[in-house]
Image 1 (cartoon, helix red, strand yellow):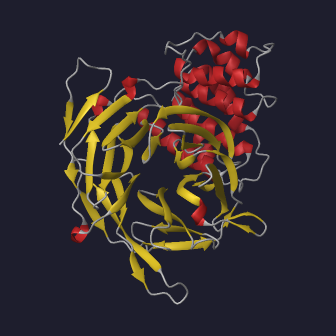
Image 2 (tube, helix red, strand yellow; image 1 turned 135 degrees about the horizontal axis):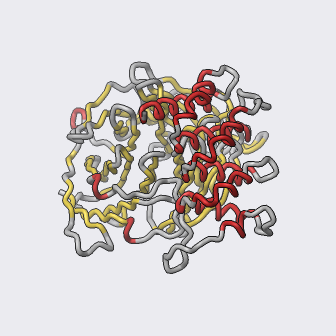
Length: 486
Protein backbone atom coordinates (compact mmCIF):
# COMPACT_ATOMS: atom_id res chain seq x y z
CA UNK A 1 0.00 0.00 0.00
CA UNK A 2 1.28 3.49 -0.84
CA UNK A 3 0.05 6.49 1.07
CA UNK A 4 -0.21 9.71 -0.92
CA UNK A 5 -0.12 13.06 0.83
CA UNK A 6 -0.49 16.32 -1.05
CA UNK A 7 1.96 18.85 0.34
CA UNK A 8 0.80 22.33 1.34
CA UNK A 9 -2.71 21.01 1.95
CA UNK A 10 -2.50 19.99 5.62
CA UNK A 11 -6.26 20.16 6.13
CA UNK A 12 -6.75 17.21 3.79
CA UNK A 13 -6.18 13.64 4.92
CA UNK A 14 -3.69 11.48 3.10
CA UNK A 15 -5.10 9.62 0.14
CA UNK A 16 -4.39 5.94 -0.24
CA UNK A 17 -3.66 4.39 -3.61
CA UNK A 18 -3.32 0.67 -4.14
CA UNK A 19 -0.05 -0.46 -5.66
CA UNK A 20 0.26 -3.93 -7.08
CA UNK A 21 3.28 -6.08 -7.69
CA UNK A 22 3.56 -6.92 -11.36
CA UNK A 23 3.73 -10.60 -12.17
CA UNK A 24 6.76 -11.21 -14.34
CA UNK A 25 6.83 -13.84 -17.10
CA UNK A 26 8.24 -17.04 -15.61
CA UNK A 27 8.90 -15.07 -12.39
CA UNK A 28 12.10 -13.64 -13.86
CA UNK A 29 13.75 -10.56 -12.30
CA UNK A 30 13.06 -7.54 -14.51
CA UNK A 31 14.88 -4.21 -14.51
CA UNK A 32 14.78 -0.60 -15.74
CA UNK A 33 11.05 -0.21 -16.48
CA UNK A 34 9.93 2.15 -19.24
CA UNK A 35 6.34 3.19 -19.96
CA UNK A 36 4.85 4.07 -23.35
CA UNK A 37 1.28 5.38 -23.64
CA UNK A 38 -0.81 4.00 -26.49
CA UNK A 39 -4.40 4.34 -27.68
CA UNK A 40 -5.49 1.06 -26.14
CA UNK A 41 -3.47 1.22 -22.94
CA UNK A 42 0.01 1.63 -21.54
CA UNK A 43 2.95 -0.50 -22.58
CA UNK A 44 5.49 -1.41 -19.90
CA UNK A 45 8.91 -2.27 -21.31
CA UNK A 46 11.52 -4.01 -19.15
CA UNK A 47 14.70 -6.02 -19.58
CA UNK A 48 16.11 -9.15 -17.98
CA UNK A 49 19.59 -9.37 -16.48
CA UNK A 50 22.17 -9.66 -19.26
CA UNK A 51 23.49 -13.10 -20.17
CA UNK A 52 26.76 -13.97 -21.87
CA UNK A 53 26.57 -14.98 -25.52
CA UNK A 54 29.02 -16.59 -27.89
CA UNK A 55 30.92 -14.17 -30.09
CA UNK A 56 33.73 -14.70 -32.55
CA UNK A 57 34.61 -11.00 -32.43
CA UNK A 58 34.49 -10.11 -28.74
CA UNK A 59 35.18 -12.45 -25.81
CA UNK A 60 32.62 -10.83 -23.52
CA UNK A 61 29.35 -10.10 -25.26
CA UNK A 62 26.07 -9.91 -23.33
CA UNK A 63 22.43 -9.68 -24.33
CA UNK A 64 19.46 -8.68 -22.22
CA UNK A 65 16.10 -10.06 -23.41
CA UNK A 66 13.28 -7.49 -23.41
CA UNK A 67 9.66 -8.01 -22.38
CA UNK A 68 6.71 -5.82 -23.41
CA UNK A 69 3.40 -5.95 -21.56
CA UNK A 70 0.10 -4.15 -22.09
CA UNK A 71 -0.84 -2.65 -18.72
CA UNK A 72 -4.55 -2.73 -17.97
CA UNK A 73 -5.50 0.67 -16.51
CA UNK A 74 -8.26 -0.76 -14.35
CA UNK A 75 -6.31 -3.58 -12.72
CA UNK A 76 -2.71 -2.42 -13.40
CA UNK A 77 -1.90 -5.95 -14.49
CA UNK A 78 0.26 -6.52 -17.57
CA UNK A 79 -0.54 -8.87 -20.42
CA UNK A 80 2.92 -9.86 -21.60
CA UNK A 81 3.43 -10.06 -25.35
CA UNK A 82 5.83 -12.20 -27.31
CA UNK A 83 8.97 -10.15 -27.92
CA UNK A 84 12.12 -10.90 -29.90
CA UNK A 85 14.11 -7.85 -28.80
CA UNK A 86 17.50 -8.32 -27.11
CA UNK A 87 19.56 -5.39 -25.90
CA UNK A 88 23.26 -5.57 -26.67
CA UNK A 89 25.57 -5.04 -23.70
CA UNK A 90 29.30 -4.91 -24.27
CA UNK A 91 30.71 -5.17 -21.66
CA UNK A 92 28.02 -6.36 -19.27
CA UNK A 93 27.20 -3.06 -17.55
CA UNK A 94 27.99 -0.65 -20.38
CA UNK A 95 24.69 -0.11 -22.18
CA UNK A 96 22.58 2.98 -22.60
CA UNK A 97 19.08 2.43 -23.91
CA UNK A 98 15.90 4.39 -24.34
CA UNK A 99 12.36 3.54 -25.45
CA UNK A 100 9.96 5.74 -27.32
CA UNK A 101 7.07 5.07 -29.68
CA UNK A 102 5.40 6.09 -32.89
CA UNK A 103 1.77 5.65 -33.81
CA UNK A 104 0.88 3.20 -36.54
CA UNK A 105 -2.87 3.45 -37.00
CA UNK A 106 -4.50 2.16 -33.84
CA UNK A 107 -1.36 0.34 -32.71
CA UNK A 108 1.96 1.51 -31.32
CA UNK A 109 5.40 0.71 -32.70
CA UNK A 110 7.95 0.62 -29.88
CA UNK A 111 11.25 2.18 -30.89
CA UNK A 112 14.41 1.04 -29.09
CA UNK A 113 17.54 3.19 -29.12
CA UNK A 114 20.79 1.69 -27.85
CA UNK A 115 24.32 3.05 -27.45
CA UNK A 116 27.26 0.84 -26.50
CA UNK A 117 30.95 0.13 -27.06
CA UNK A 118 34.00 -1.56 -25.54
CA UNK A 119 36.51 0.65 -23.75
CA UNK A 120 37.75 3.39 -26.05
CA UNK A 121 36.54 1.71 -29.24
CA UNK A 122 34.02 3.68 -31.32
CA UNK A 123 30.45 3.50 -30.08
CA UNK A 124 27.61 1.85 -31.91
CA UNK A 125 24.14 3.35 -31.97
CA UNK A 126 21.29 1.04 -32.88
CA UNK A 127 17.71 2.05 -33.66
CA UNK A 128 15.16 -0.74 -33.72
CA UNK A 129 11.41 -0.90 -34.22
CA UNK A 130 9.02 -3.49 -32.82
CA UNK A 131 5.48 -3.48 -34.16
CA UNK A 132 2.52 -5.07 -32.43
CA UNK A 133 2.30 -7.79 -35.08
CA UNK A 134 5.69 -7.50 -36.74
CA UNK A 135 9.21 -8.72 -35.91
CA UNK A 136 11.94 -6.53 -34.50
CA UNK A 137 14.08 -4.78 -37.09
CA UNK A 138 17.11 -2.63 -36.35
CA UNK A 139 19.71 -0.45 -38.03
CA UNK A 140 23.16 0.31 -36.65
CA UNK A 141 25.47 3.24 -37.23
CA UNK A 142 28.60 4.80 -35.75
CA UNK A 143 27.88 8.17 -34.12
CA UNK A 144 30.27 10.92 -35.18
CA UNK A 145 31.06 14.47 -34.16
CA UNK A 146 33.01 15.27 -37.30
CA UNK A 147 34.99 13.69 -40.11
CA UNK A 148 37.04 10.89 -38.57
CA UNK A 149 35.90 11.81 -35.05
CA UNK A 150 33.94 9.00 -33.45
CA UNK A 151 32.34 8.80 -30.01
CA UNK A 152 32.77 6.10 -27.40
CA UNK A 153 29.83 5.08 -25.25
CA UNK A 154 32.25 5.06 -22.32
CA UNK A 155 31.91 8.83 -22.47
CA UNK A 156 28.15 8.69 -21.82
CA UNK A 157 26.33 8.38 -18.51
CA UNK A 158 22.82 8.41 -19.98
CA UNK A 159 20.88 8.35 -23.20
CA UNK A 160 17.38 9.32 -24.33
CA UNK A 161 15.38 9.48 -27.54
CA UNK A 162 12.04 10.80 -28.73
CA UNK A 163 10.12 11.04 -32.03
CA UNK A 164 9.65 14.35 -33.81
CA UNK A 165 8.14 15.47 -37.12
CA UNK A 166 11.62 15.69 -38.59
CA UNK A 167 12.77 12.27 -37.38
CA UNK A 168 14.00 10.68 -34.17
CA UNK A 169 15.86 12.92 -31.72
CA UNK A 170 18.59 11.40 -29.56
CA UNK A 171 20.52 12.98 -26.70
CA UNK A 172 23.24 11.82 -24.34
CA UNK A 173 25.06 13.20 -21.31
CA UNK A 174 28.81 12.59 -21.11
CA UNK A 175 31.17 12.20 -18.17
CA UNK A 176 32.33 15.80 -18.51
CA UNK A 177 28.89 17.27 -17.80
CA UNK A 178 27.96 18.08 -21.39
CA UNK A 179 24.75 17.35 -23.30
CA UNK A 180 25.01 16.02 -26.86
CA UNK A 181 22.19 15.86 -29.39
CA UNK A 182 21.52 14.46 -32.86
CA UNK A 183 18.55 13.56 -35.05
CA UNK A 184 17.66 11.53 -38.10
CA UNK A 185 17.37 13.27 -41.43
CA UNK A 186 16.06 10.19 -43.22
CA UNK A 187 15.29 6.64 -42.13
CA UNK A 188 18.94 5.63 -42.32
CA UNK A 189 20.81 8.93 -41.92
CA UNK A 190 21.77 10.91 -38.80
CA UNK A 191 23.23 14.35 -38.27
CA UNK A 192 26.56 14.69 -36.50
CA UNK A 193 26.40 14.78 -32.73
CA UNK A 194 27.02 18.22 -31.26
CA UNK A 195 27.13 19.78 -27.81
CA UNK A 196 23.88 21.49 -26.84
CA UNK A 197 24.66 22.64 -23.31
CA UNK A 198 25.71 21.70 -19.80
CA UNK A 199 24.00 18.99 -17.75
CA UNK A 200 23.60 15.26 -17.21
CA UNK A 201 21.00 12.49 -17.42
CA UNK A 202 19.03 14.13 -20.27
CA UNK A 203 15.46 13.12 -21.09
CA UNK A 204 13.63 14.14 -24.24
CA UNK A 205 9.86 14.63 -24.28
CA UNK A 206 7.89 15.41 -27.43
CA UNK A 207 4.63 16.69 -26.00
CA UNK A 208 2.71 18.38 -28.80
CA UNK A 209 3.90 16.87 -32.07
CA UNK A 210 5.86 20.02 -32.91
CA UNK A 211 8.61 20.83 -30.45
CA UNK A 212 10.61 18.80 -27.95
CA UNK A 213 11.47 19.53 -24.35
CA UNK A 214 14.82 18.41 -22.97
CA UNK A 215 15.08 17.88 -19.22
CA UNK A 216 18.46 17.36 -17.58
CA UNK A 217 20.06 17.42 -14.15
CA UNK A 218 22.31 20.36 -13.37
CA UNK A 219 23.61 20.83 -9.83
CA UNK A 220 20.76 18.86 -8.26
CA UNK A 221 18.09 20.80 -10.15
CA UNK A 222 16.02 19.69 -13.11
CA UNK A 223 16.57 22.08 -16.00
CA UNK A 224 14.20 22.46 -18.94
CA UNK A 225 15.45 23.41 -22.39
CA UNK A 226 12.98 23.95 -25.24
CA UNK A 227 14.41 22.41 -28.38
CA UNK A 228 13.64 23.58 -31.89
CA UNK A 229 13.84 19.96 -32.91
CA UNK A 230 14.49 20.44 -36.59
CA UNK A 231 17.51 22.69 -36.12
CA UNK A 232 18.52 21.35 -32.70
CA UNK A 233 18.60 24.85 -31.28
CA UNK A 234 18.19 25.52 -27.58
CA UNK A 235 15.41 28.09 -27.28
CA UNK A 236 16.34 28.92 -23.67
CA UNK A 237 16.51 26.98 -20.43
CA UNK A 238 15.37 27.39 -16.84
CA UNK A 239 15.55 25.51 -13.58
CA UNK A 240 12.16 24.00 -12.79
CA UNK A 241 12.58 21.84 -9.68
CA UNK A 242 15.09 20.32 -7.27
CA UNK A 243 15.41 16.60 -7.90
CA UNK A 244 17.77 13.66 -7.90
CA UNK A 245 18.72 10.69 -10.05
CA UNK A 246 16.97 8.61 -11.18
CA UNK A 247 14.14 10.78 -12.45
CA UNK A 248 11.55 10.47 -15.20
CA UNK A 249 9.63 13.13 -17.10
CA UNK A 250 6.51 12.45 -19.11
CA UNK A 251 4.12 14.81 -20.84
CA UNK A 252 1.24 14.97 -23.25
CA UNK A 253 -0.56 17.77 -24.98
CA UNK A 254 -3.85 17.01 -23.25
CA UNK A 255 -2.75 15.92 -19.78
CA UNK A 256 0.11 18.28 -18.95
CA UNK A 257 3.43 17.17 -17.52
CA UNK A 258 4.71 14.98 -14.72
CA UNK A 259 8.17 14.74 -13.22
CA UNK A 260 8.96 11.75 -11.01
CA UNK A 261 12.12 11.15 -9.03
CA UNK A 262 13.40 8.91 -6.26
CA UNK A 263 14.58 10.86 -3.23
CA UNK A 264 16.53 8.27 -1.27
CA UNK A 265 14.19 5.41 -0.44
CA UNK A 266 11.07 7.57 -0.84
CA UNK A 267 9.69 8.11 -4.36
CA UNK A 268 8.48 11.65 -4.99
CA UNK A 269 6.03 12.54 -7.72
CA UNK A 270 6.03 16.15 -8.85
CA UNK A 271 3.13 17.20 -11.03
CA UNK A 272 3.33 20.53 -12.81
CA UNK A 273 3.95 22.31 -16.09
CA UNK A 274 7.60 22.98 -16.98
CA UNK A 275 6.64 26.44 -18.23
CA UNK A 276 6.14 27.56 -14.63
CA UNK A 277 8.78 29.96 -13.38
CA UNK A 278 8.58 28.54 -9.87
CA UNK A 279 7.22 25.21 -8.72
CA UNK A 280 5.33 25.34 -5.46
CA UNK A 281 4.40 22.72 -2.86
CA UNK A 282 0.91 22.67 -4.36
CA UNK A 283 2.33 20.71 -7.27
CA UNK A 284 4.16 18.05 -5.24
CA UNK A 285 2.67 14.68 -4.41
CA UNK A 286 4.85 12.69 -2.04
CA UNK A 287 4.71 8.92 -2.07
CA UNK A 288 5.56 7.19 1.18
CA UNK A 289 6.20 3.54 0.42
CA UNK A 290 7.69 0.48 2.02
CA UNK A 291 9.00 -0.89 -1.27
CA UNK A 292 12.44 -2.31 -0.56
CA UNK A 293 15.41 -0.70 -2.31
CA UNK A 294 13.70 1.09 -5.23
CA UNK A 295 16.18 1.67 -8.05
CA UNK A 296 14.23 2.82 -11.12
CA UNK A 297 11.01 4.71 -11.68
CA UNK A 298 8.93 5.38 -14.78
CA UNK A 299 5.69 7.27 -15.26
CA UNK A 300 3.24 8.32 -17.92
CA UNK A 301 0.05 10.37 -18.14
CA UNK A 302 -3.17 8.78 -19.33
CA UNK A 303 -6.68 10.23 -19.17
CA UNK A 304 -5.70 12.63 -16.42
CA UNK A 305 -4.01 9.95 -14.30
CA UNK A 306 -0.37 9.53 -13.39
CA UNK A 307 0.53 5.87 -13.83
CA UNK A 308 3.92 4.81 -12.49
CA UNK A 309 6.09 1.71 -12.20
CA UNK A 310 8.86 1.30 -9.64
CA UNK A 311 11.65 -1.23 -10.16
CA UNK A 312 13.77 -2.53 -7.30
CA UNK A 313 17.41 -3.60 -7.14
CA UNK A 314 16.21 -7.21 -6.85
CA UNK A 315 14.25 -7.04 -10.11
CA UNK A 316 10.74 -6.67 -8.68
CA UNK A 317 8.21 -4.33 -10.30
CA UNK A 318 5.38 -2.41 -8.64
CA UNK A 319 2.71 -0.40 -10.48
CA UNK A 320 0.33 2.24 -9.16
CA UNK A 321 -1.59 5.35 -10.12
CA UNK A 322 -2.59 8.64 -8.60
CA UNK A 323 -6.37 9.28 -8.51
CA UNK A 324 -7.64 11.60 -11.20
CA UNK A 325 -9.22 13.95 -8.67
CA UNK A 326 -5.79 14.72 -7.25
CA UNK A 327 -4.37 15.90 -10.56
CA UNK A 328 -7.46 17.44 -12.12
CA UNK A 329 -5.87 20.89 -11.89
CA UNK A 330 -2.51 20.02 -13.45
CA UNK A 331 -1.32 23.03 -15.47
CA UNK A 332 -0.94 22.22 -19.15
CA UNK A 333 2.52 21.74 -20.56
CA UNK A 334 2.23 24.82 -22.73
CA UNK A 335 1.13 26.88 -19.71
CA UNK A 336 3.38 29.51 -18.22
CA UNK A 337 3.16 32.20 -15.61
CA UNK A 338 5.00 35.35 -14.81
CA UNK A 339 5.72 35.11 -11.12
CA UNK A 340 7.60 37.28 -8.70
CA UNK A 341 10.03 35.84 -6.17
CA UNK A 342 7.18 35.51 -3.72
CA UNK A 343 5.05 33.59 -6.21
CA UNK A 344 2.50 36.35 -6.95
CA UNK A 345 1.49 36.80 -10.57
CA UNK A 346 2.81 40.05 -12.00
CA UNK A 347 0.68 42.25 -14.23
CA UNK A 348 2.17 42.77 -17.68
CA UNK A 349 1.32 45.82 -19.74
CA UNK A 350 1.17 44.01 -23.07
CA UNK A 351 0.69 47.23 -25.03
CA UNK A 352 3.96 48.72 -23.82
CA UNK A 353 5.93 45.51 -24.40
CA UNK A 354 4.38 44.20 -27.62
CA UNK A 355 3.37 47.47 -29.26
CA UNK A 356 4.67 48.32 -32.72
CA UNK A 357 6.82 51.16 -31.39
CA UNK A 358 7.94 49.36 -28.25
CA UNK A 359 11.71 49.38 -27.62
CA UNK A 360 11.40 46.04 -25.78
CA UNK A 361 14.09 43.52 -26.66
CA UNK A 362 13.39 40.13 -28.20
CA UNK A 363 13.65 38.35 -24.86
CA UNK A 364 11.16 40.68 -23.18
CA UNK A 365 8.69 40.34 -26.04
CA UNK A 366 8.97 36.57 -25.99
CA UNK A 367 8.46 36.44 -22.20
CA UNK A 368 5.30 38.55 -22.51
CA UNK A 369 3.94 36.33 -25.28
CA UNK A 370 4.71 33.18 -23.28
CA UNK A 371 2.80 34.61 -20.29
CA UNK A 372 -0.32 34.86 -22.48
CA UNK A 373 -0.40 31.07 -22.63
CA UNK A 374 -1.59 31.25 -19.02
CA UNK A 375 -3.21 34.66 -18.61
CA UNK A 376 -5.13 34.28 -21.90
CA UNK A 377 -5.72 38.01 -22.02
CA UNK A 378 -7.92 38.53 -25.10
CA UNK A 379 -6.99 42.24 -25.24
CA UNK A 380 -3.58 41.16 -26.55
CA UNK A 381 -4.97 39.40 -29.64
CA UNK A 382 -4.38 42.38 -32.01
CA UNK A 383 -0.79 42.64 -30.75
CA UNK A 384 -0.20 38.93 -31.27
CA UNK A 385 -1.57 39.09 -34.81
CA UNK A 386 1.03 41.73 -35.65
CA UNK A 387 3.76 39.38 -34.42
CA UNK A 388 2.87 36.87 -37.13
CA UNK A 389 4.58 39.10 -39.67
CA UNK A 390 7.70 37.68 -41.34
CA UNK A 391 9.79 40.57 -40.04
CA UNK A 392 9.65 39.07 -36.57
CA UNK A 393 11.90 36.34 -35.18
CA UNK A 394 10.79 32.74 -35.77
CA UNK A 395 10.46 32.03 -32.03
CA UNK A 396 8.24 35.10 -31.57
CA UNK A 397 6.04 34.06 -34.47
CA UNK A 398 5.57 30.48 -33.31
CA UNK A 399 4.86 31.53 -29.71
CA UNK A 400 2.39 34.16 -30.92
CA UNK A 401 0.54 31.40 -32.80
CA UNK A 402 0.55 29.23 -29.68
CA UNK A 403 -0.78 32.12 -27.59
CA UNK A 404 -3.59 32.77 -30.06
CA UNK A 405 -4.60 29.14 -29.77
CA UNK A 406 -4.49 29.29 -25.97
CA UNK A 407 -6.63 32.45 -25.85
CA UNK A 408 -9.15 30.90 -28.23
CA UNK A 409 -10.44 34.15 -29.69
CA UNK A 410 -12.16 33.80 -33.10
CA UNK A 411 -10.61 37.10 -34.23
CA UNK A 412 -7.43 35.12 -34.90
CA UNK A 413 -9.07 32.78 -37.41
CA UNK A 414 -8.72 34.87 -40.62
CA UNK A 415 -5.00 35.41 -40.08
CA UNK A 416 -4.39 31.76 -39.19
CA UNK A 417 -6.35 30.71 -42.29
CA UNK A 418 -4.16 33.06 -44.34
CA UNK A 419 -0.99 31.39 -43.02
CA UNK A 420 -2.21 27.98 -44.12
CA UNK A 421 -3.54 29.24 -47.46
CA UNK A 422 -0.20 30.80 -48.39
CA UNK A 423 1.68 28.97 -51.18
CA UNK A 424 4.36 26.61 -49.93
CA UNK A 425 7.82 27.86 -50.75
CA UNK A 426 9.93 25.09 -49.31
CA UNK A 427 10.67 21.42 -49.80
CA UNK A 428 7.83 19.37 -48.30
CA UNK A 429 10.26 16.48 -47.75
CA UNK A 430 12.18 18.62 -45.24
CA UNK A 431 10.13 18.62 -42.04
CA UNK A 432 12.76 20.81 -40.38
CA UNK A 433 12.07 23.92 -42.41
CA UNK A 434 10.80 27.00 -40.57
CA UNK A 435 7.71 26.94 -42.76
CA UNK A 436 6.87 23.41 -41.61
CA UNK A 437 7.29 24.39 -37.96
CA UNK A 438 4.97 27.39 -38.25
CA UNK A 439 2.34 25.43 -40.17
CA UNK A 440 2.30 22.73 -37.49
CA UNK A 441 1.77 25.33 -34.77
CA UNK A 442 -0.97 26.98 -36.85
CA UNK A 443 -2.90 23.73 -37.18
CA UNK A 444 -2.64 23.14 -33.43
CA UNK A 445 -3.84 26.69 -32.75
CA UNK A 446 -6.93 26.15 -34.90
CA UNK A 447 -7.59 22.92 -33.04
CA UNK A 448 -7.32 24.75 -29.71
CA UNK A 449 -9.63 27.57 -30.80
CA UNK A 450 -12.11 24.87 -31.74
CA UNK A 451 -14.25 26.78 -34.26
CA UNK A 452 -16.05 24.65 -36.82
CA UNK A 453 -15.20 27.15 -39.59
CA UNK A 454 -11.65 25.76 -39.53
CA UNK A 455 -12.73 22.28 -40.63
CA UNK A 456 -12.75 22.95 -44.43
CA UNK A 457 -9.20 24.33 -44.56
CA UNK A 458 -7.92 21.68 -42.17
CA UNK A 459 -9.50 18.96 -44.30
CA UNK A 460 -7.92 20.51 -47.38
CA UNK A 461 -4.51 20.43 -45.68
CA UNK A 462 -4.99 16.84 -44.51
CA UNK A 463 -5.80 15.66 -48.03
CA UNK A 464 -3.16 17.66 -49.91
CA UNK A 465 -0.27 15.64 -51.38
CA UNK A 466 1.67 18.91 -51.68
CA UNK A 467 1.90 19.45 -47.92
CA UNK A 468 4.38 18.47 -45.21
CA UNK A 469 3.39 15.03 -43.94
CA UNK A 470 3.54 16.11 -40.30
CA UNK A 471 1.16 19.00 -41.01
CA UNK A 472 -1.22 16.63 -42.81
CA UNK A 473 -1.21 14.27 -39.82
CA UNK A 474 -1.92 17.07 -37.35
CA UNK A 475 -4.67 18.48 -39.59
CA UNK A 476 -6.33 15.07 -39.78
CA UNK A 477 -6.35 14.81 -35.99
CA UNK A 478 -7.71 18.36 -35.69
CA UNK A 479 -10.59 17.64 -38.09
CA UNK A 480 -11.53 14.54 -36.11
CA UNK A 481 -11.54 16.48 -32.84
CA UNK A 482 -13.51 19.45 -34.18
CA UNK A 483 -16.10 17.17 -35.73
CA UNK A 484 -16.48 15.34 -32.43
CA UNK A 485 -17.24 18.64 -30.69
CA UNK A 486 -20.23 19.35 -32.92
